[in-house]
Length: 148
Image (tube, rainbow, N blue to C red; front, side, top):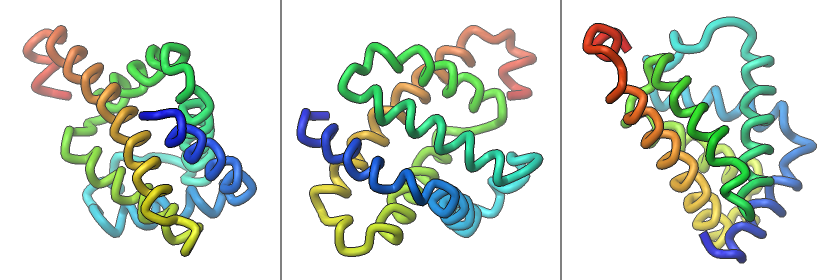
């Protein structure tokens, strides 16, 4: 990501922060519409899950200009998600749900430049998560790797 993209993501995220609950609700609605098989992965209160989503997004977005400050946390997140059964192809669906939700909330303000900045941010974070998940799986005993 370049500096301009980071600034765009941080600025637009700040604009979205007051709509955090709505953003999270719309995201999960869209996610489950895109792939209903993901719904069973989520247990408990979805409002609380939405708050976790927004907390993680805030951490990641704030750390984009100093990625070294967030890499370890993002790697741990990827490893935890692997333990929940998240597979590589799920990252595409999540990215589509996130970008679609942002486009819906921002309307015309979600122009090509903003979309590209958010796409770059998501690809960066998803790649770190997937690499950490793959590393986790490579170190699991065969029985645990098959179960995961």
